[in-house]
Each structure stands twice: as C-alpha cells, then as structure tokens.
Image 1 (cartoon, one colour):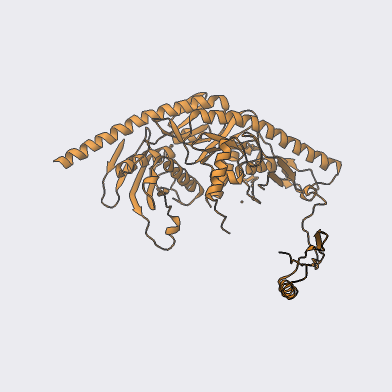
Image 2 (cartoon, rainbow over the protein chains, first blue to last red; image 1 turned 60 degrees about the vertical axis):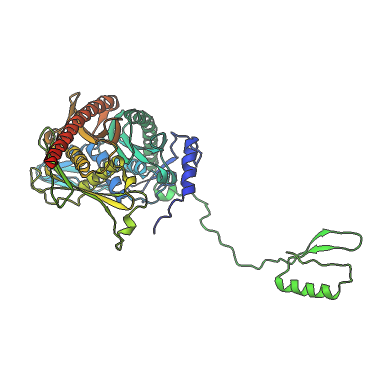
Length: 311
Length: 224
C-alpha cells in the first residue's frame, strides 16, 4: 500500500514548529522517546519499542548500516566461535524484523540487534581429540557469546540546511528532514560508525557536536540495556514467568463492540412556558411529520397554540 | 594522473587515479528530458532533475576475479552514496523533469574506491557542462598506530584500522558525505577529519589545474 503523501501545509507546520524549538510530541531537541526492551522465552529473541516504532532503498541502507556497525567494529569475539580450527566454526546470524515504522528505525534496529546478541546463549561444546560433542540445552547450560563492547546508533536529523537539529526523529519529522546523520558509539566513547545520508551539507563542528551528544545518549541507553538484561536473568533464575507474552499489558481493551439498538429520539424538550399557552416545543421530528404539522397549522391558523417543528 | 577523452556517444568521460593505483572511469550523459513513456514519468520530478547513478566494478579490478560486478549489497550502498553526494552538489533545480545519468566503473581497485569515483565523477560533470555548486573532492583517511593517514591503500584498509571517507566542497568546507568504519576514540575524530579536509583541499587544487589546462587545450584546438 502506498503511503499517504505529506501535504505542504503539514510540512510547513512541522518545519515552523522545529524553528520554534517545539516538537509534535512535546519532547525537547535532544530527548529520546521511551525505550522498552523485552526478551522472548528463547535466548536471543528481543523486541525493542522506541515510541511506536517497533518496516526498497531503506532496507538496503539499514542492512548495511547495522552490518557495518556490528561486524566492522568487531563487537563479537569471532575467534571464540571457532570449534576446530580450519574445520568447524559457529556461524551467527541476526534477523531483524521491522514491525512498525514510526521513525528512527536505525536506532531501534541497532539496540535490538546488540541486545539480542548479548542475550543469546549458544550450545556448549566439548572437544576430545578429534571428537566434538555438542550438548543440548538440557544437558549443559548454554554459553553466552563473548562480546567486547556494545555499539549503539544515535540518529540526528537536520532541517533547513543544517540550522536545526533533532535527536530521534519521529516518522513525520523524518519526512520533512533534509538529511540524517547516524553515529554509532559504545559507552567507552569510541565511535564505531558515522554515516551521513540525504543531500545535506554538514560542517565539521556539527559532526563533532553530534558526536558529543551521542556519547551522552549512548551511556544512558547502555545502562538501560544492562538493566533489562539483568532483570531478565534474575527472572529466569527465580523461575518466574518471562517471554513476550508477559510483556503485553493485561486488561487492555483491544476491541469494543456494541449491540445494534434503536435509539429513542422521541422525548420532547420543553423550552419556555409563557402565559398565553404559547408553548414552543422543540421536537426532533423527521421530515414526514414536519410536513404534516405544517399542513395542520395552516388549517388551524387562527389558534394561538403553535407547534414549531424542530430543525 | 587525470585524463579526459571525448567520445561522440557519451558527453564526457574522465579517468581519475589518485596517488596509488585505483582507477575509475566515469561517463555522464547530459540532462535528457524524460520522455512520457510508460513508467518513466513516475520517476520524473516536476521541479528538479532526477539523478541516476550506477556503480560497478570490472571483474578484473580486484586481486581475485570478481564474480558479480554489480547488484550486490556493497555496490548498492556505493550507488546510494554517490547519488547522495551529487544531489547535494549539482544544481538540479535548473533541469526540471530531466534525468542526469552518472555511470561509474572501477578499472583497478586498490583502496579509496569511493574517493576515486567521486573525483572522477566531478571531472565528468564539469566536462559535461552541468552546473555544480563547487568541486566535490573526496578522500579517505585512516588512523593507524596513533597517526592519521590519508588515502589508504587496499592493504591498509583491510588491516582492520579505522577508515573515514569524506566528500568535501572545498570553498565553504561543506561535507557532502561523511562515512566512517571501525573503532575510533572520540578525541581523535577531529584530528582525522582535519587531515582528510587538508587532503581534499590539495586534491581540489589538482582538479582545478587539470580542468583549466584541458580547457586551454580545447580552446586552442578549436581556435585553429
């Protein structure tokens, strides 16, 4: 389904709001939306909600960015994945599914990918000479991957030829932006990837300023991820319930249906009551009846009592 | 280092090879009006030109013969980057409802693929007479053993160090594209970007000189 085009007045409204330092959802320039991280029952499944972002060209860009961010920055120790050198090795694959696009999918995707990798446990292996035994999760506890650092992407959108800058653009803001700058950093203040897209001109100072803001944001998000991972670990150890099903809010109305019932519109509403019995009665009558009343009033025009049909 | 040739089929063609040995061949076609053909009209924009870029590597360009010259993900990414760079630099508002094609082919890949493409494409666009905001000069830079290095070769790129590609419009120091891979501490970023900017400005001097020399040659030939 083609997405609805953005009207000019909406576009102007958004740009003007940004010029006055206001955002549609009330955030400040450097504020992120609420990030919610949930884990599935299996190790390695993770859902990230960034506001409501939970989906061409866009897919290629996202793919390459996440690939460069994770692979080139060597966040996973690939040597530890080797089982028998020259023969057997573990292969890791990250599948990202976009459920809902409400802006800034790069950040959500990178957070989801790195969190899932941290959460994942691979089967334990033992080697005796030439024999390799792979233990199932029941026999031996699965082993986590060895991860050096957690690169996280932060997106900055530019408006009006670089005059205004926003962090974590929503979908509407993305439609009116001139360009996007994505900086991936880890909490040790190392930059893993920088990528500018869209046709804007940047200045060196802007890039440096963005990198400073990014380091602050990345520290916050890293703490959030750590907390979520620890919570999940605790819940699993204590035998509590975990998984995606638990993360859905209970007692939420998902649909509302009412039975078809006739509505009584016959009650008259009395407006005024004067001495001469000149009662103006407002009655919600249908067209047919209106005609009837008119006919009757012409016939009885001498009577003071008037019945005015409602309009 | 830079040479240009004229060919009746394409409007302009330029070969650019930076300090080491990457070579890129670029052909641009002058802005053509998009004919109202089925499907093509949906691509044309009413107020500016559409930019169509294609990047491919010759099969003999790399050390091992390349099986798939175009269509793989890295080529698509490179195409998008080129498009983005030139959309920022070309004055597309002067050609509504038209299409400008830029085809780039790498003849020899020895590092700095993106930079060679951009520099060669700049020369080709200048030669085609398409108005630009400024020369687009690109350079790659890296950080190995605490020293910023400029114009990395293939060996230096694949050693796993930091790699920054920068496309610069020299006069106003506007960055049309910034792309960086691999880890770099935040404090070193400024030094690296400065080194790349200086290299781009030197390249700008070279490109300018070549354009003027070529123009002089052509005008003397036409004069006689």
